[in-house]
Length: 312
Image 1 (cartoon, rainbow, N blue to C red):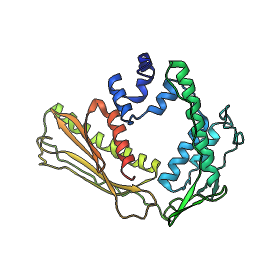
Image 2: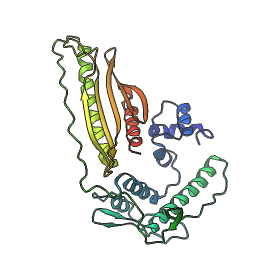
Image 3: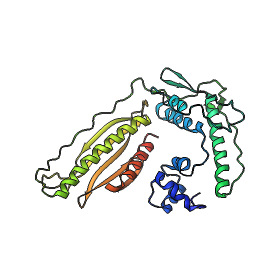
Image 4: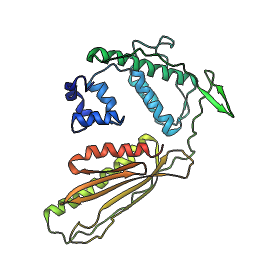
């Protein structure tokens, strides 16, 4: 779309938060562009199936929390549609029938749910493709959906799941892990006299709290367990300057309810350059990236990306 109609950049740039059109195209080619869904739905205003919103929340609950939904987020998303569903629904499905249920705090899903989800995703892709190709004169090919089946491997054979058979999911742990307290740091800056240095010291502490709150809230939302937190001030801490040491936060995380003892690490380092905060973010599966204080929105997006990658 952006190649065929560069003027659409003005409609989508606030959603994808990249500095320019060229960078956005490069990230799209790499299939890694946070905000692409919002850009299509709110910026380009392409066709959007309400069922897809339900499927996204359902997918996150199954992948990250093993079907555990005590807050009824899936039901909340269903109710938020107010009965307004896709007008052109798949012909092999009953209109406005959503095969999702609950047993206590656990979601009830079976092969019928999987078939319903896949057909609506296929339908969404097909209708959105037709809509965008017509509006922007893009090349298109006929969509040929593949046959859908859900199977369980047993030895070297595949056994089909008939509709009504519960799909296998990881069972949530009986006791979900509560994140530990974040160790406090209390640097002694009593001898600092420079206003700029004092301002930078205060900004670094505020950024530290901001990112700690973000990690905790995002992990809770995504069903990711924080199993360990370490914090410190690497370097030489002197009372008359903030130079010579950083502030760091390191989180050991894994999928909530997973019995595996292994975990992945996500780390935040808050440094300074010319008495301006500089944030470095990296993880076990993510490369280091630096962000100045005026790019903290981008830093937030990258931190969420690091968290998303780690428990996989």
